[in-house]
Length: 214
Length: 214
DNA sequence: TTTTTAATTGATCATTCAATCAATTTTTAT
DNA sequence: ATAAAAATTGATTGAATGATCAATTAAAAA
Image 1 (cartoon, rainbow over the protein chains, first blue to last red):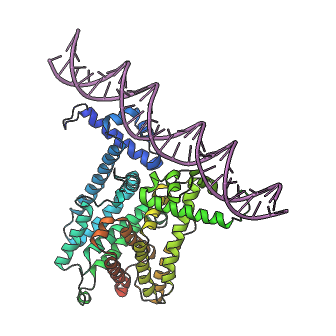
Image 2: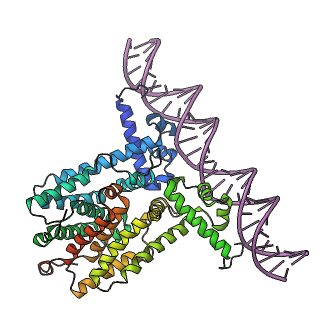
Image 3: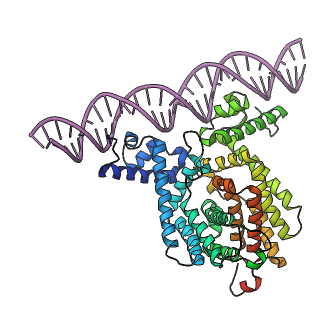
């Protein structure tokens, strides 16, 4: 890892992967504030200094963790959405896959939350206030599904940006609100949310026309 | 503040209030991780030791800040909801007030987020995973509005718990997602969200009967 | 006024942490 | 086999932090 070329050896890459996994486990177990390099190293079974050797600094490590978490959930969801053909089926798949991922990758979600709400850029801007550079690919897909449904006339009139974020918010709520998790199991929440959203997007196409809707 | 009686002098109470305000400002400006007692004291124009004198420890201070933030937003929202009479009007007021509070109390919301996603109990449980003891009074009100609307027959059939959390999630999304704030202004988001929710709760009361809805 | 109690401070302590470095082992290249 | 580069470690450093304490000032009670 001494050379500045983009190349990294297999062993270095494996180590980095190992550290990223250990970091995720650490974040889940004790949270960001207590997730010191020593704690992460302990879980990886290595020395603290080795982390500094493979990553520029702690922020660099956390950024790699974050990237991995985002890519993993995005590919999981998008893959399932793209199996479907119609906007309605895609929308259902989107909600179902988003919630299913949370159910099957709990540690990942906790780690994601810990990083997003704790990490800050060098100029001290919290990650949760960062506008995802280009754009969140998941939200982008959701927007496209909604727009396509409206174009095809199977969805009614509504403000797509607001609808998309409402759906995302409803999905995220299940991840954040643990008392909700206790009251409603994942399957029920998924099924009912799909039903409610379906009702919301179906809309009253004629009635909507009286006003200028986005 | 030496005596263990419940009484606190006026001056002590004012100081505590001042420190809580300084803590909110600090949390907004530099975030929880960097919000050391020294930073908070600096913004309050007092010495670090004085915080330890008036609060048991840092966690105690943060708990007081959190309580104040929760009470303030709850009273703001609930007061406006209770002015309305019909379930539909109450629901609209709920959404509008929740979003309006965010718009007019930005610092408070940032501080709230910082605490909820960073603070942990002594046994290391993050606040965001805590089931609000009894129950969140805001969510409770929302549930009641929805149930009452269904009872009166002005709302259709839907799973109230899921609907309530979907609405809360949609509201919270605006607070958390800053790229959304840039794309859609608060007034538009509020108006459109009310419209969408209205469509969702109105429901197709007859069509819903074919299945067993919660 | 005097005395007692409350409020406030500066200094200090022990701890924790990220980062660094020289030294050592392992891997790769010659 | 040997030299060179990469990987890994233990120890250390310097900075930051929460908490504590004796000392000082302000307020309240006597």
